[in-house]
Image (cartoon, rainbow, N blue to C red; front, side, top):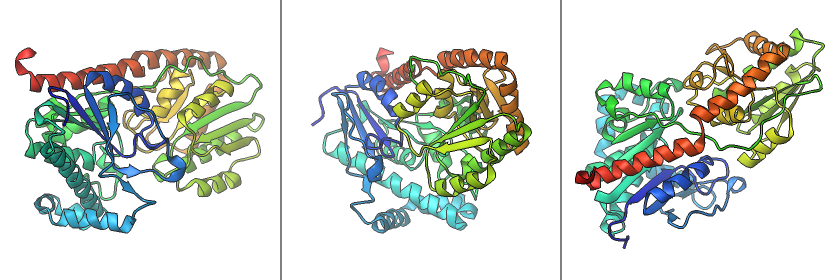
Length: 435
């Protein structure tokens, strides 16, 4: 049985705390959530691949519950997805969604997404119901928090329909928010997720405005809750040997447009044939081999390059500590507010990035250079050239980056405020006369 009169936080994740890569930024948030609640339960959905697994130590009042977690190594992936499909097809929720959005659901990708979202949601709903029936959760003193605005958020909505006293919130980032990222441009059960949760917390003002424009009648429930990074305790040095050093950090997937960055770097090398450039990309992904081969054949001799593959956060910061960096570049076609840019700015690295999603909230003319949403390679090359040609301006950018991080993306400040907001929401519902 759960302790009497305890406040419970249930946090649904993709793989945390078992993945060293996915949701690793929760390492900064969890120490603020833990003291705000009597009990915190982490409920991951997928067990990570062996090379990505990490055995984390957790605060004393934090536990992990893995009963809905799928292990691709130990189970049949086909059987798992058949389970999601059949449970979705047996649910009246599926047919209600089809009536509302039959056009995108007639597209195979739209149908797969809807089935996946609902299958995950039903697992979440059933997990909550079991815990309540077993006396392990008191609905009146429980807050469900889904880290992603996806099928787990829909599961929280379904659980709230069964147990209206439960408080339910979700963060909303980028992949889980912007329908335009996809073909067809469809986010399943979007209205239910946006309007039936007690709060939706986009990580950017852009995300809040986006949701508010789509669902104006529900806009009062959308609140910005920025992510953040910790103070590394150092500032990255600029190059002192005439080489201009560029870093990028992301998964190597189509939306990140690493091929476009390569063409921009190649153009920079051709525009300044007497200058040496060095580019390091941190991160891996399904396109890594293809992109590495493209870099080998595209970049001129004065642009060296290196792909590190996935690095733990500590290793990324160690690179910034030990190696000079002159610019961080992100040319994604869609973003929330990337943690990678927060980390670059808190190390004092000027940022060149596309003006998409929440990026204009963190990158400005003071902290770097904003590119068009769909830049040409020459746009990227000229931005790199501007920073390389103006050392005094670059120094000013480095100071402004650090100031911007301190003001808006300091993890301790942001996560403390977010934990307090969740605590207040639960206490307001469970002790309405005390607030």
